[in-house]
Length: 489
Image (cartoon, rainbow, N blue to C red; front, side, top):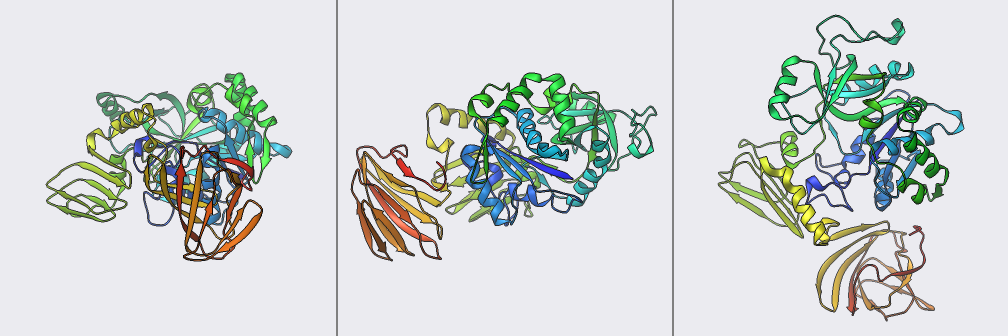
């Protein structure tokens, strides 16, 4: 059996302002009009023969978004493992492997970042099938993307010149004859992993025909990965065993021991295992792959008009060429510009030259240093029960639009510093206020005094929409004392 391991721990700073720390790119619909990148990653595995339910490894803050997005595509994960802190890919895959081998199993793990695009799924499936016998034979597989140009933003993999023979034909040995085929199911022994090159070096790599882009996708049996991790990074495996052994299960989530996982060294699969093992092989992949690592990458894979523009949302252009323009909440008009990126959201606008979009991270760093909310979350904030959106605020008041999903409820809570006034504009609300329970319909309201225990619920079958007016000396989200919470917060 093959178990997809979906790595969904990224924070998405390179695609700000659409991507935020609490709502990174894997949860966004960036490429098509149907699914998010996480959903597409899971869905493309479903046609693989012998595929099992996926494991998803994610930040604890993202757990409800993962669960909801899986529910919407009808997929029930085998596990959603919550990382209390980021420790890179080697520990993340280690805990997935420990989960996979429980009960004496030893499935093949197909490790996939949640935020990649693959346009040719048939080619991807062929590459996975090509790797299956090598994984069963104890090899550790990485998928190498056939380079489309001298890209300086990716690491590279140098392959041995001759494809490997199939494990069914006997021992898997490194090839010795010169030359190499270009079929996307060819398999090669790895000669070396190399860091991101400068342009001149990248051009030399392409001229040899021996280099692939490092996709960050892997395939191996769970036990084989654990064996090599114990051989090369025993401290990582020991910390992961402790974190997994001390984990707790809660409402479909597996929470790793925070103390043990925090003590784990941070390292990638590449450095910890793949660059050290003698059993690394690379499968050539020509499947329309992109890691969507920048706005320019999104432009490259986007649908362009006759002037080479990629336009999304309410956008009007005049005599503009080679641009990516995205409008989320209002009209964006562009006149006489070339090779630019403009991204509009309700609370931020990015304007950059296409060849400078890698520097967006510098803006995010400034926002973080100033503790600006625009680095962390959107104006619309998603919660397991629905969402809220800031409408207006000043020194002693704040107005929000709140949406509660059918059957959902907020925690039983109280506030020390603010009172709240709720006005229902759509649906039905059941409100607990102290010792009383009241039902409100459209155009009715309720006042929640400071210090009173309260809960908001949607007992209906349509979304509940209401306007919340907060007033008080402090209006921060941390002024919430929870007494009961169905979501375990």
